[in-house]
Image (cartoon, rainbow, N blue to C red):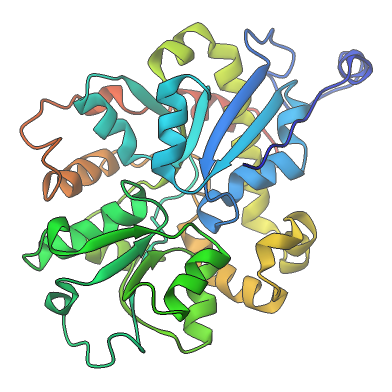
Length: 345
């Protein structure tokens, strides 16, 4: 588990009262300044805005003391929030729908990604004669963690081809070097994962990509519409009790998203932890070019996105089929709109 804590000093806060800040909400009293955020695979580009907000001290600028816990996949991060060990999740939007189907109300309040960035590929070594999705029947597919967005994407692709999740075996392999090793060693036959992992495996010639959601066009081809991806979400109870804190979190994330729109490759390499680069900064930057379009430019969730997400889940997930899901209670752009009116990059 990776933990990083940023503590705003009293001196810094005092100085902030004397100088102009770029945040209209920076001086608002925070109800819950110490916030724990759970994330599944923080090194992935899927969660890059979170890392930028952390590394560039945007959370600290908002008066927040952030503790980030990194799990093997989004499903594990979700469990942390449901269990009460995390206040907020940096994870997949579709989890808010799955939670509501179980009677638990969680809401997205700032979007990180407007495309899932997930790539499904087969191992050239294990499946040299691959011809169609049907060939995956009986195979082992690596995902970050069972129940995470990677397994959701793979399950949907399977469903479109007439297969179900029970026709394959999903194996949790994480989101970094472990995923690469699992495929290269033959532990799995296929892999649903994200960059920079997938670009590294493409470059080494280990995989054949069979479904890709790193661009908006590819995402719409796979899902039939806009598909919201990584976001910050929390229980409705947390948001209701802590509106200023939620706003501060949103301000920091919107600022990170704006920074990413103009940051150079050199800036990016200098900002992220060295471990994210998988030993190859040039490859990391190439992977960034693959997914840059997938980053939300402003944190706003597209109005038609939640319906696409629900339709996707209903195609294969029995826990949500036939359940009365109120999409309006799973997301809000209200905090982002306020942030956009005040936050500068």
